[in-house]
Figure 1 (cartoon, one colour):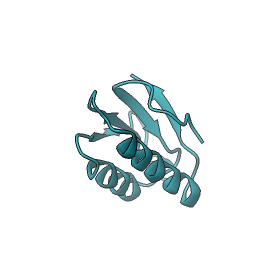
Figure 2 (figure 1 turned 30 degrees about the vertical axis):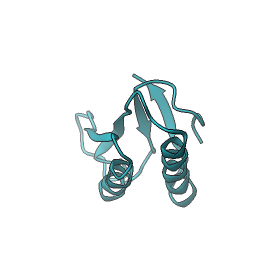
Figure 3 (figure 1 turned 90 degrees about the vertical axis):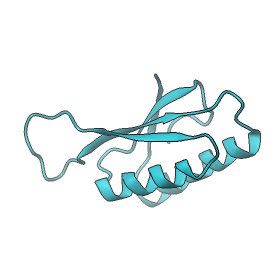
Figure 4 (figure 1 turned 90 degrees about the horizontal axis):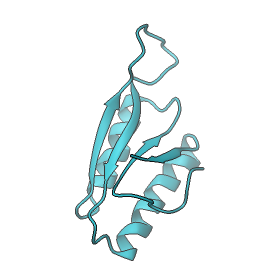
Length: 93
C-alpha cells in the first residue's frame, strides 16, 4: 500500500489497473468526508489499451483543519479499496 499519512493539502492517489467505475466509487466515498474534494484524472495514453484504466489517478484535496477522525476515515476508505482491488500509491502534489 501507499503512505499511511496525509502529507499535504493535495495528493495524487493511484490504484494501478482500477476500472473507471471503481475510481468513481472511491471518489464518491472520499467526498462523503467533510471538506474533501476528489477529482478523477484521465489517462493520458495516446493509444487505447483495454487492460489499462481510463483513469490515471484521483486528485484529493484536504482542508487545512482536517480532524483526526476524518483522517482515519480517509485511510480506512483507501485501505478498503487496496484490500479488495489493488495496492495504491500516494504522491503529494
